[in-house]
Image 1: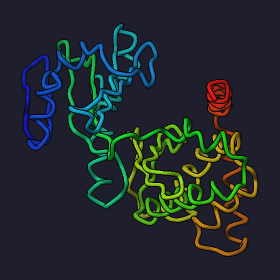
Image 2: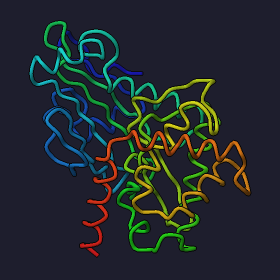
Image 3: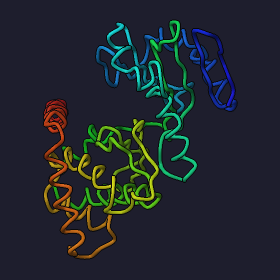
Length: 286
């Protein structure tokens, strides 16, 4: 890693191979990132902002995710989660992505991490990632899920590819922690899909995680919370059979389905409502 900027207030690190790219886009300093105004807004709230910044000459885009702690109450809320003690969320995601890439998993490339402090307290942090290919779209905005009827043959490669993605991750003993449709990017045509995962500061490596076990069930429940709004029961069962490398429902798979359903119901209804709102918007645009 190369230290691009180091000081009591600002610090930024990046792989040496990406320093020139960051410099060309004006993202080679903490101030440059925090004052970024261009790019497409992917998500925004009072304390977080995610931007998609086009690469040079139509190249791969960068995702810039910024965490802000504008008021001292925000700092105090996170005292033991990075604003004073521990690693900031952005750093946890940077480390998780690096570990998952080292394990050969399909995730976006972590390009830089930075933070700004005032005295001993963190006031802002960010992570920059690089998309795997040009022209990706998050699965919650994939038109195949809205324009093709559930269960259609055209959707089967997408379901199978997504099952393979989840199985490879869990076979490697990793869990994502936020395995929602919005955190999976689709590249290529739906008949030959390729994927990359992002937004995984909660990702963990644990021997207790495996196919249909441990935190894998939490990942599958998170995915199913959104999929239930756009996919049929048959499609979701086909996904699980492919994921588990089974031709029919076994007692173990039946027990896992019950566990997934129970976990899914504990998830906030906001996820399903959010996806349904996106679905309605895309259909209006069609």
